[in-house]
Length: 258
Image (cartoon, rainbow, N blue to C red; front, side, top):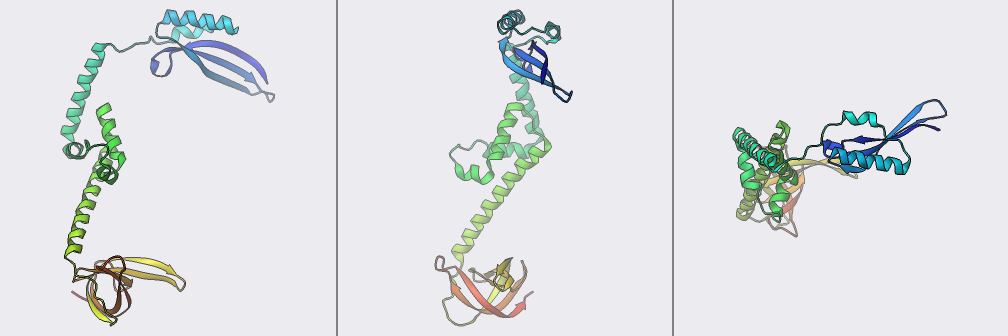
């Protein structure tokens, strides 16, 4: 590999915030192909004359020519003044106000849930940290994409629904009767809450979570699909951890109810 070119030049850096010294190199490989390298060397200055003087100094010190032909293509470095920052703050707040006015649901969710204490893990974990990240980005930039708005609203609504269901389930459980303690096969009547296919050594079996009209819940063999109201006869065993939950076996006389 042979070196074809090795020069320094002045760039204006990422975001045009500072003049930087860069090195441009070109190599020719043994197969005839040319390989280029363009790398950052160091920051120079926000003042062009000062940056140029330093570039000349580094060029002489490192014995690498300064490619002056690129210098005239630079944009001037501009730093925001206090007046610029104040103007930006006013414009940002106006954008925030307009956006919240156009998106009242999200505005309410930001107000209700967006300012929870950082240690309130129940809310933060329940909604999801992405919601708070979207909220912080919004107040930083004053805008959100339609997808971000929809996602943030969805996270809050799913959280609210879960909390409502948890409260409902707690109330139902508090009012439920305990699972009967008996060795006999007894009658159950209620609704199938859900089904799940379970793989066993005899193949795949469909199991059901069933809620009896007396309030308790039991898990066992297939008696219907989710939402079906049925009655059946089975033997039941109470859970060791929860008197209002049990397991039923060998359901028979299954009748679908209106």
